[in-house]
Image (tube, rainbow, N blue to C red; front, side, top):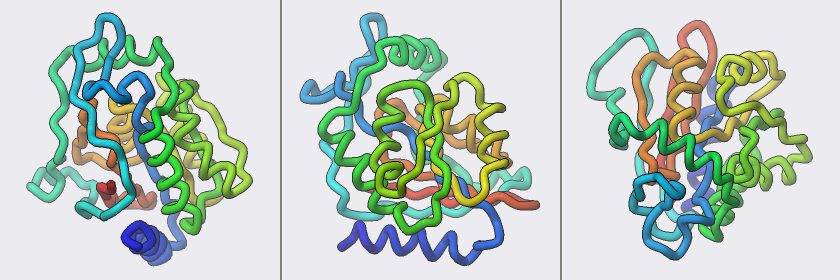
Length: 218
C-alpha cells in the first residue's frame, strides 16, 4: 500500500511538469558481496562500511524539494555523510570487482520498477557494471525498453544522451557518480550519497531552472 502511495506521488510530481523532461537518478541497489556479512565489503583493499538492513518496500521516509540558483540554505543540505578523501579510490577498487546484486538488492530493483512503471520513462541508462544494469533491468523489462550502457567515468556523454532522449529517463549510477550526474543536470546545490546508502531517488526536472525532488524509500 505504502509503495503504491509513493508511486502515485512520483506520477503526480512529474505530471504537474509534463512539458519538462524528468530524470530519475538512483544509485545501484545492494551488492551481493555485502550480503549476510553485516558490512559492505569494498574489495581486498577497501575499508568496510556498515550495510543497511535488508530492504523491504514499506514507506516514504522523507521528501525534499530544492532548486538550483546558487542558494546555500538548509533546505538543500544533504542527509547522508560522504566518507573522507579516500572514498573515490575505494569506489574504483569496488568497481573493479563488479559484484552482482544481493537478494535485498534485487528486491529494491523490483520495487524501483514498480514505483516508476507509470512515470513516463522512455529511456534507461546504466553504467557498464552488473549491479547498475541489474538495478535497471526490472523496469526495462516491464516497459519493454532496451537498457543503454554508458561508461561510468563519462558523465558528460551520459548527460548529453539523457538530454537528447525524448521523454523521461532513468539513470542508474554509483555513490560517487550520482552527485556528479545531478550537478551536470543543472542542480547546483551539493548532494552526497554515503557508501552504505541505497535508498535515494533523485527526481530532476529539467528546464530554464532545473528543480530537484529528493526521495528516500525503504
